[in-house]
Image (tube, rainbow, N blue to C red):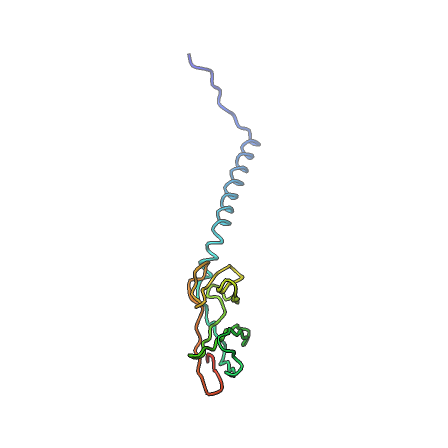
Length: 153
């Protein structure tokens, strides 16, 4: 003998509750998925060298003002530049992170450049080894005269 099964009757108020719950869960899960993927899209969209990370125009520094074998941080038109004079010449490096253009800082104890925005790390030569940056810090051209170093331009 078959058990007596009565069809489950849903009232209009129960149907609207079920539909409201279904809509809430669908939209909630969608919002959750967007929140999970937003950092990935931000990371991918932000990667790139940007338009120009060097000084807007040439930066002139007297060679006598550059101590031998020391990193000298300079600001030119709001852009950070590091200049190093060695026995073999003068080199210059843009200190704008190649990820999104934040100013990196030289960490003497660790011998690395650190970007405070997304914790990107570059070695002493400016090559990325940790975090979102994929490109090296930009080397700038240096033209030496007998008394001055002309950077960029």
